[in-house]
Length: 449
Image (cartoon, rainbow, N blue to C red; front, side):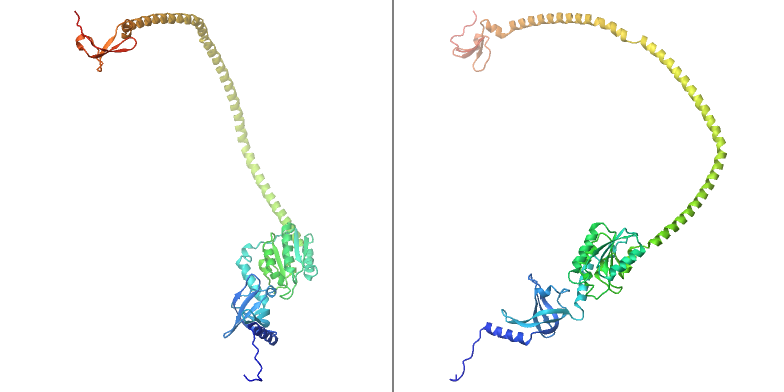
């Protein structure tokens, strides 16, 4: 190193990164970039991270939450976009990136893309199915209007409703029909009218305008409120060429607010004329029917007059038969009454009641005689039993033992000894007494002399 040479400044990584960041931010305060979205990430923080790429290169980008919430369409991978932002460096990784301030799809407007995405989503849910469309009431009692009080649309609708059906009640629910916050208010008004039960049909709409002016009728909250309404909804947004998602969800789509009023309100004068025509036609039909009925009645009267005489003859014969039947029935009843009296008298004579009463007098005598016979037989039986018991006692071995006798048996065989020669001197014998036993030894056996 030369003596006059200045020492080189040694930078830390952080210092070098900050220098590069400052140079980039000063040199590229605003850049417009065109590319394809890839590696899209949407963490819980609400920020959007993605990479913009072309055929050769790529660059990281970030869209912070405050800007991401303003997107009217859903960002997805593979989408060609044009973005505006500022070039900077993310210090922790030392990578340069673009912080986005604006993003729109290439070749199609952001609103149009958002509209197509939301339409596809709601169509999959069935909110636009024709099967759920309801017919408009023929003669509603009250019509609800969800629109702005300051627009020409409400004046047109009121004029048409008043001209076509002056007796029709109108319930107006004023709401803003464009700008930020208009969609939630429109949806709330639709839900309020639907839940109130005071209208039979409602018209939701406004006059013409740009796509941005009509955008609140493309909002998801409005479309879902229309689809959930309890009463039929007529969509009348803009002119005939204007189409919004509210038109797809409504039960009937009118090209203009005036056409919507014509759709829900019949011409009262036409109805009155129609009723009058129906009355005249009904009167003519009734007159014709009455003439035919009179002719039928006259013809029937003639037929009845021809049949009346035979019927009268049969009626007279019926009276005769009825009288004869009555007399026969009375005679039969009298005959049966006489027979009944005869049978009743005979039954009285043959009644067993007298015989039973006479027999009942003898019953106590028979009972007393039976009791005496039974007592005599019992006394005789008792005497017989007593004699038999005495005889049995005399023959009982126990009675013999009680008189002083005993039964001698060999030991241990238990053989009864009847003769002296059945035992020998020294044999052990057993003597059974009236009470108890004796064990004895033979001292001497003496035969009878």
